[in-house]
Length: 315
Image (cartoon, rainbow, N blue to C red; front, top):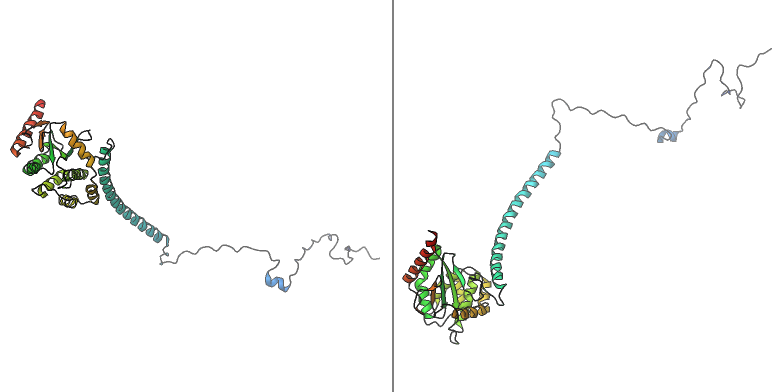
């Protein structure tokens, strides 16, 4: 009689795979599904395995490592920075020079504006005192004030101006005097084309450029002896010889910018110690007879005496 079978049939009835494991025998792991040719060629179904990292190889013995390009880029950046610094220094020098010119022009403009802010008409720069009819400072400052009232169409004024020119220059350069000119217009005529007013206004234009004394000296020397006067173009040419070469000055002369101021100065002279053209005052006192001006010796002595009086209280 045959005994019972040691294997049990599966559901399919084939006996494999077994429905239950055979006692004493381990079950076989399932085989992976077979891949066809297309799967093997294309790698379909094959799990991705990352490639192992390859260790870096040390440099060969005796051969220096290849230099990196980074230091070269840093050097180029440093060169660019140095070039920018050099350009910046040049720009600073140019800007400094430009600022200096702007400040100079601004100083001239500010002087004119400051003089005109309290006046209903244009007033030149360097006006002495607060009155709109005051004279203009030609040189200074110094402890002794010398006021000169003169008309550029006056023959006696021309002789006086030429005679004391050197002494006035010397005392002004030594810082002894403050020289104040009061340009008058008392000898205008049709014959000279109102030369007194035109020349006096031009003196105001010269004061705007801080060249009043050189301009007056050049004007006395250039005037014809008969006091027929000079044209506007001749006045501008005289100013050029005194160091004033500027289109604004020429425009100022031709426009007679300070014509009204000249009229005011002429009117104010009558209420002062003015005693005819020319009149010279030293610290407010006359030193010469009426309309005679003063000789160089009289002017020098009067300034020396006034200087000693100024210094005496401090001794």
